[in-house]
Image 1: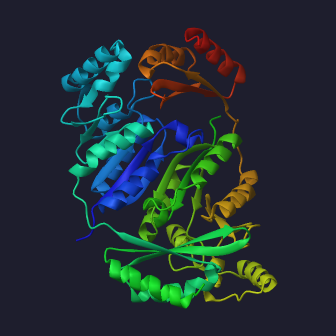
Image 2 (image 1 turned 90 degrees about the horizontal axis):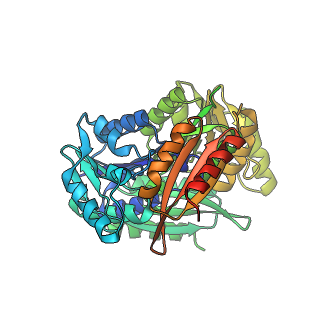
Image 3 (image 1 turned 90 degrees about the vertical axis):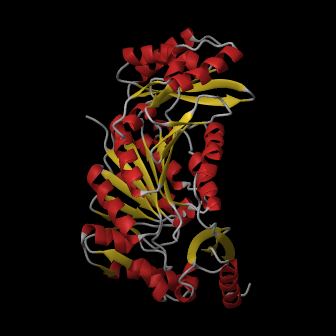
Length: 240
Length: 240
């Protein structure tokens, strides 16, 4: 059975303007690979309502699971929750369970639960809350879409909350061999090897270091013996 | 006149598996912002022919300019050029101008121009070559799509080749104010400020550092006096 598929939607002007370098995509990619879920596509879009609706609808239809990050805080540019609700045609308002979480938290830390903070209790009808042990304001799951915060510490905590609820596939084994030859010299033997190991994914990632050209050859598959055999053939073909 | 729009397509299994952290998106985002071109969307997809065709067609229609990175080397998983040609319905083969560049380069460095390396001379009919001062194998421009390498040093050199050929917009001025208060306390005054400066883009990017909550407020616009005035108002509202 093929592994389940996933997509990620990163929402935020700060990423697209180059002000911030996204860290959440790399974290999620590693966690999904470890769980045997294939991350097939990532989209990064700005804080634009129509763009959020279109991307959520397209990704939700095309993949088993979708993760979003960003735009669920208390400020005027936090419009993710409302537009995810719009994407699924459901009503959204401050919900009692989310309000109760925030009320207890802000009472404990001595801050006012003002109108801005109450925005973080806006949850679409039918959604399930995602636990946020870092700063309490919850994410939520609606249909196959998990809506999570953009702040990396919170995003990572929410991924940890959601992942155990998903059905994973067979985790991939991955081995890497560094070959200090130009990719042009490696390509022929590598294509031949890929032909003989059709069940493995064989990728070549060139680098240039101190004026030397080389490539990291990454071989992935669910059968570690086959991965090991392919790596051994490659080592024999390109002795150091 | 609104600024020209752009999208980026990052092609490569190594990014989606979490093995490699993409660096090209952040570089391009900063260069485009500096040139007054609005990067509106980034998509990251795997080395899959149909996915490349679909993404190139969708982004090419939706935005003024598209940049791709990855998948134009000599190995079997380098399938970007052929699928970009397919996306535009044009013929692709080894082209004489690209072959001449590679032949001269490999003669100079004493490597054989073998079948694998010749793959890098496959250029769609009607495309213009993009100069690659780092490792010679060219990128190309077809319609509004610039097809570039994934190796960061080469990608950056190709961006430098392409950018001067594009018509930019008015570069944005950006100022940032760090406010050491929870976003929930900042949100109300910030929304009010955004209402009075409708021509500015005002974003709030929360952080958590040593147990302290705060937010960086970033104000962007083409009129530096207005940006400065809004920042000054914010400083007065939230004295340190």
